Image (cartoon, each protein chain N blue to C red):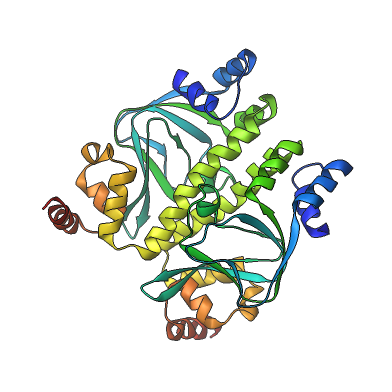
Length: 189
Length: 189
């Protein structure tokens, strides 16, 4: 809970009562590696804050899993395109390591917005940050060749290279694992 | 200005003084068809609200223009991935029709957030709406074949089929104009 409060306090002021509201509204949840934060076809009912661990977002395309995105400790995890309009998710979110989260339901999040003075501001700033990374990813898919996308992955997630199987990184970059090996060789020489 | 106030009032309450603050902070701007709201390489300094007209967002990929997105009357236009971190934009935003906007600068937007009670809430809700459409577009690029993407375009923008040149629609769907013609024939038969 302390990490979450610290992240919120980086953007807004919280007094003691507001801290205790936050502490009541978020509850802890654990996922073992391989378990799902959100399964394909289910509606995303929670936003999670990752205290420890790593998840991936993926899509099922004709039986093939395409990895779109990662979140790790210190970040929020949610499929907003299911959570906000309350529609079934086409994206699955799976823990890749044993993961510890603080989660809040849609209803309790509305309560947070109503009960904490700076909450709307926090919500706006937090979603702006996530939004910018999404726009960049969309742009990158349109314009960047795989080698550039891999370099950007290294810059954005230097800590994840050791934690992720090559298979997931290749899928995120949008290439086969063999092609990723060739790119890695070229970059290291 | 009336349309903009109506759109804001759909999400939050504005008293008279707050209405006059909004009226002071937004200024009107006109773009002739072909003119730019944002040129590639420039930093996006304004958010615009489209009162009348139509713009497209595009990327330059090896000399080819790839259309990513459209906005028309009643919608906000901005490249948030340039506007928020104040970095040069790789995306260009061009008016496709004579377009009338109300624009607000980054600095005045911060003033809006500080001076209008519900402004943070409005900002959060407005960006959530745009964000959801972006996530869906990213998902669609990963999973959907061109015919599905064209059908979704028709659903999302039924009014734009008549207003846009085929060239732009094909570019948005991610195919050549000839392929779009074939899809249209198949759908109409």
